[in-house]
Length: 206
Image (cartoon, rainbow, N blue to C red; front, side, top):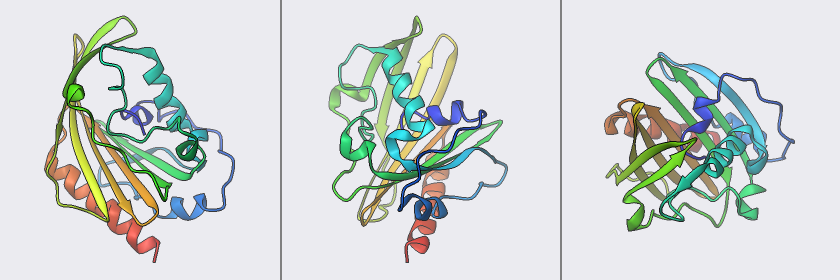
């Protein structure tokens, strides 16, 4: 998942992705709508690169002219890599007036997002002619699964600020990605939602 873009594009219904043998099981392990939120997109299942959310995120990255090469999508899975692109996956997005939450589950036995490079802690990009500043810090949330990482990115432009909270968790051969987007993303809320998502994943995979 890239930058929470799925939540921003979520209102439009998506065509079904090509079926995959493992994808339906992953879809059953996705979160249900959190209190006060409604399903905005999905669930959609299929190869990760074929999902609407993935395509939307990649297109957003292509449109951004980043001053620091390699920082767009830092800390996230490389959806253009063949092993990631072709992996069975499922995604769902929820929205409310306060923001959005997007969860993706990807069957990946040998891949996990790498930490962002130090140069990516703060960088600028030009998006559709507008200068945008990205500042990312690591969040010290309780560990989940075999390994986990969490980050908070503040995105600032002349139009205002938004925050993107991201959590990646590995459970066996499955990678869980959770993105929360809003004007203010609290670490406690991100912690609680990621724990609920992880618990549902574990129970569904038993």
